[in-house]
Image 1: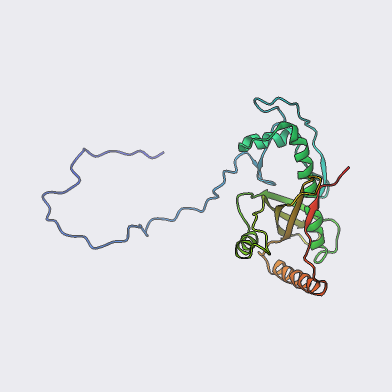
Image 2 (image 1 turned 90 degrees about the vertical axis):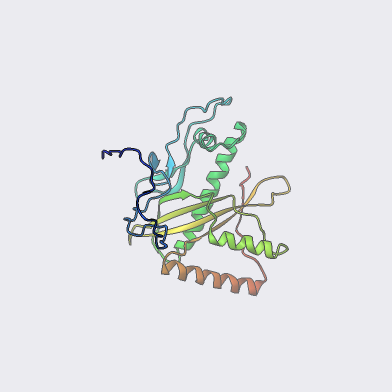
Length: 254
């Protein structure tokens, strides 16, 4: 710890020195040592695999309904010996309370079911992409991060297209975004995927409908080549059959 000594109080202007104008100077001190780059997120207490805090299973303050604490195992491999577990309804509710979101407690279990269903479908879409580049069936979701407040460039583009041509494109923003890092164990390569989650018009009976936009991030030559190839194939198929690609996901009915 450094110690400092203070000088006696004095007027900051030297009245006995002739007033000579100083040459104009840049207000930034370019000789000062640069600060080390820092992540704006405080990672203390966060799981590095999903950037989420450890959520308790205890009921939240003022909670009136007892929620299940059992967690459901997903079909998504985390490593060669384990799969990812989805949060329990109680953990899910605690996460909503932590974010300050008001959610009726009686709907939490349904929200968890939809959450799990959407992530399973997202993984299915990832596997479709990976089959084009990776022939083995041992893919793993190494880590992921929710980024609901950060809109992807593609989502921004479609919002602009919707604003420009509202009769042809949807201008609704995605309600969530995930970044998933997929590991290819046989090669050791890791590929980042961007997933935008959209709400779609509900079914006539009121059942929710969602749309997922899953694709490799444009951060490597291989992913860029793959995106161009798929976009070209989709455009040619749509031209031949006069169809639009369908990425809608409907909640399964019992």
